[in-house]
Length: 341
Image (cartoon, rainbow, N blue to C red; front, side):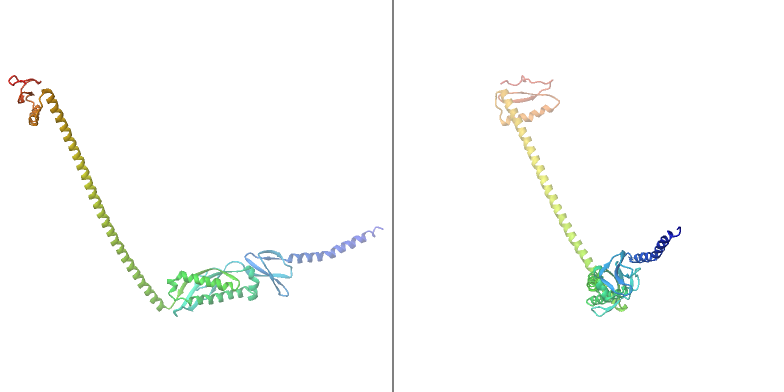
């Protein structure tokens, strides 16, 4: 009686134990279905066993549930560098041989250039169809850029590397953008480091540039002399104008001064004339006899005797007026020796 109830319990325990391995396997498979795509990478989903790649979707960095039977094919999403140079290659850049070519004027040259590019995320499936591996895609970019830049330099003379450097760099960058757009990538930047030619040609080119520079210096010196001469002419003209202005001012000042003096002198003469007329009229009114001009002139001469300290002036009017300076204490009186009017 006691053992029968325990049989169902044993069967249930056995069932739980049998289910545990399947649950564990399922949990493991579920965990394996989530795959991580690293930062700065694009991804395409690939079947692990069959090798088939899904080109309908491009995956971005993160954790994605794509199934345990799938995996990611990774490609860079950041800017990549192709360096066609022998030295100064930055870390992480793909180092390639410099561009060996001939310029338009048939001069053998070597150019050192760096190019930065990025893959177009939305066109990654098309790029994958051209080249499945990252290194293969990079080789396509490098070879096409080399061919296009060589073509551009073939349309320029070697001296353009110095004389038209900015224009040349712009054309090289435009060519890089054009060729990368055909392989589902974008040209982000281009740097033209240096160019190399044969020593003989470089010496000739340097000598030519030195001569041109000397000519420019001579022209600049001549221009300086011309400017100095023009400046001297202007200074002389300004000096002449200054002299004329100063002379005109001096003449105007002299005229103003003379006019003022003349006006003052005229005023003084007028005032004196008025004073003499007043004196003449006063003397005439006092004496009752009009004085002639001759008499008044004689009076003026004698009136100056008032300035003498020796004696005051007395006068008496008769038929012929006479003026006498008599010593005394001053005052006005008639001399008893003169005839009264």
